[in-house]
Length: 258
Image 1 (tube, one colour):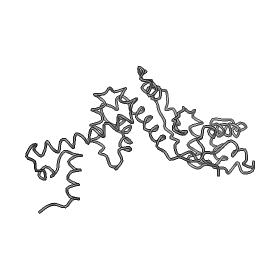
Image 2 (cartoon, helix red, strand yellow; image 1 turned 45 degrees about the vertical axis):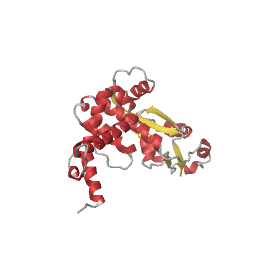
Image 3 (cartoon, one colour; image 1 turned 180 degrees about the vertical axis):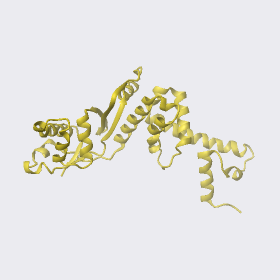
Image 4 (cartoon, helix red, strand yellow; image 1 turned 135 degrees about the vertical axis):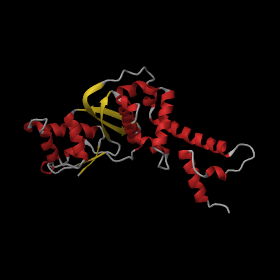
């Protein structure tokens, strides 16, 4: 009795993911044995996933070298089988894998590089949206400012890094010698975003990182100003916050005021 197609598909998927299962007994061939035929598909599947990682993590591959990156890719595939129909999302857990898995966690710069590169991927693939303008800010009546909230552009990514991942990425992007890993005294905030088809990134001071996170959490202008008094004198805080907002509006980070 022939098995139904869904059952065969499940067995085939199981073999691709774990190289085991009942699929071998379903293969009939006069040339190659069942295991060899299935191995062709299994190898191609893994090579396609590793190819996707190579595309998304150019700097990480440069830091590790091709052979070690290939070993990393295969270990990651075994630990994190693809669970999405699109290969675009396969690398989303790589930074966490590097931070938690020997021997990679002994080099924490690797996780930061992966985190930085994945944030750029997310920024590039984010949906388009309208952006607010300085004229929009100027049109807000003074009495409305305390309750004003700000919608961040969908491409904006906020991450914290403790290593010089951006410098390593920049060197890899230019096909230059990579700088030695350098660790900051404390994690540094970064914002990564897209304008048109161009990716931008910038480091943030502690107060800037806090403010951007607060805007993303939906805090209004008055609440943001109150929070900023931890770093900025109260008499200057409104001007400081407004100045940052003007800069971020100019950068295309704010998609709406409400």
